[in-house]
View (cartoon, rainbow, N blue to C red):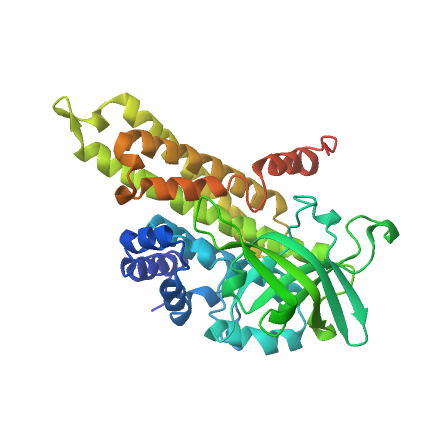
Length: 386
């Protein structure tokens, strides 16, 4: 008997939900309160193969697509968890699988799939460059059969819990390149091997996201760890960025469905003035509106993921999915907070934790303002605004 695509997706959803049931909201609340990394959860995800779904079977992974990966992260967040603790191991595959050498894949992917190595860090953003990736200043200077790395990255998450980092660095000065997107190169950095040349400073933030600032002082990367061609790393990173936007959209969709689930349940159970508060249109309408918007965002996410899996250009769809999902989920977060009233602010109800987490993706990994400018310029043909 063959299994249909819909049946396979439903099986994935049910399996992930069963795993997440072992990690109830009390687990995530305690992890958040301690500002701790959910090590047990990530280990279980790894052991059951969910973090290696994008890795082809010949390298020890499940060989599934971006759509399946999206469903996994969506279900984690819908359960009340936070897939951000492990999502980089998925979206970094966008660059490695499409641009990495066969030798690199053979050397790293089986160990990543098994959990022997973790690739949870993506080093791009810098303090002075911000969203202007073409202005990063961290340098990679070729010396014989290695590159010497010096510079600084910021807002790089999970560096303390990762063995490897996908690192973007400048190999040619910006004033010496024909196009501003040239001169950047992408590398696989072994952080454990170079721990004496890397300093990591945790950044205290409003959510538990293991975010850090990273300093490189004469860190060494073997030349064979260069992904693709030297000076062409920006284009290679775009594969990872599109994957990242699709997966972030999926987490936001999961968050949005979480808020809807919680708000509906509470609105049906909570009685004030001898009637359930969900009977009031002032409570019903924001929840219903958010539900419709989240369902619409999910359709765009599905389209972006399917295009990605088909190897087609999905830049516009990935960006739109990220924008629509994060904006609609933020509305759902506010609707849930309003529905719960004062109880929404109490940590034991978990709404305030998820409320804080949902806010992040409006500005990260790319601000929605830049997504809007992307659509204006690249889709609608409007003049470049920056």
